[in-house]
Length: 233
Image (cartoon, rainbow, N blue to C red):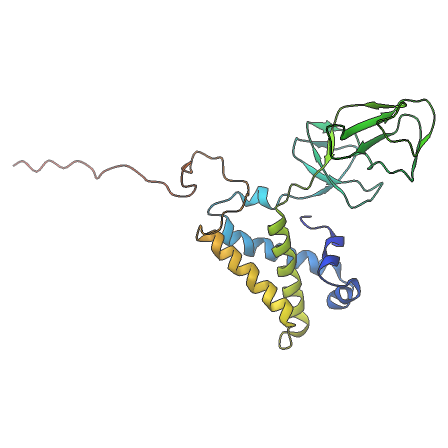
């Protein structure tokens, strides 16, 4: 999935969304696929859309993850998106440390205080730690296999969600479309047209293939000539 189901709540009330899809969550998936195709038609001349719309996976202990892979942790289910820093297999993304939680011996957590102390820590005290921040004795800094990081472009995700909601609203009542939905969709299309025309330059993954010129991305020149003809008689 590119968008987590809970992320739509910021733009539409959950009850309204449920009424719109009539309990059919597969409908959202269908609309999302259509929106990916719609946005790709504007972006794919300049950007690698397979990477732009890379999926967020549900972490699985039996799956190996390459660096840069994005997952959510279904066990702690805190809505945090984690990105792998190295090749990872079997190691679960750690919960975010909280002073209201108790952590058993050997528990691994991610601690963030906005300084260089931010990182992954393990409870090596031999007992339970509660309320004790990882900077205190009992915690040991360890390797950052996963870090809380959303690899998606926030502007793309915003427009994507608005476009999905617009198409869902069209399905329910196209003639009485809420103005806020129509305007949000128009802003999304205007932004996409700006990107396509190279007037807007978002930070998105570009193609790495040698087919593309490094200076102009999608512009390239083919050199050659017609077959040689001898015009001497």
